[in-house]
Length: 189
Image (cartoon, rainbow, N blue to C red; front, side, top):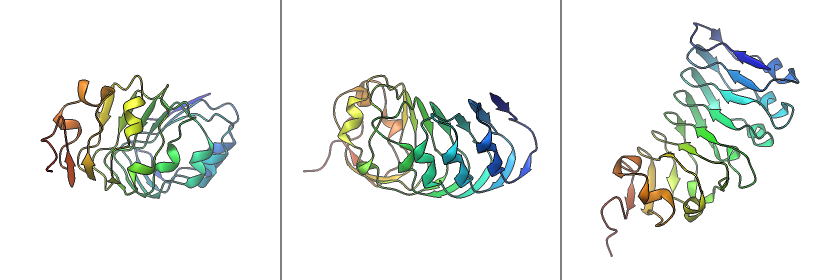
């Protein structure tokens, strides 16, 4: 059920055979020296799929599209060298609580993403190449406690309402291409 191998000196790539463990609920391989891609086979974990914690490694390549087929509560892929589109991890019907893909090389249009409105409490996208606007739908996420989109390429007005201003200050938004509106300076007319 639990495979926790964090904070070791594991090297090499992640074995794709892990997805054949039918009772796996939690996979922690963070803080190692793992390289290569996230296995495409991870999309075939038994539903809903285990929590996947792979942060602080040297994983590279795109996030496999197959990951969109599972629905873990926690996904942490932060501090790797992953590229491309992470939007497969999102979805309004998912039960995701924690989604952290910060400090990678990800590039996708945030304005096209749907968020789980009931379950999401932690969304960290900082230090990537994510572009587009912050979706108004984020104001409807009910229990957001951590939110950071700093150091990306986002633009346009920060949607007003929900938790986006009440709970998060300028540091959640700064160093983007053209974000404006509270808590950042007002948009120029």
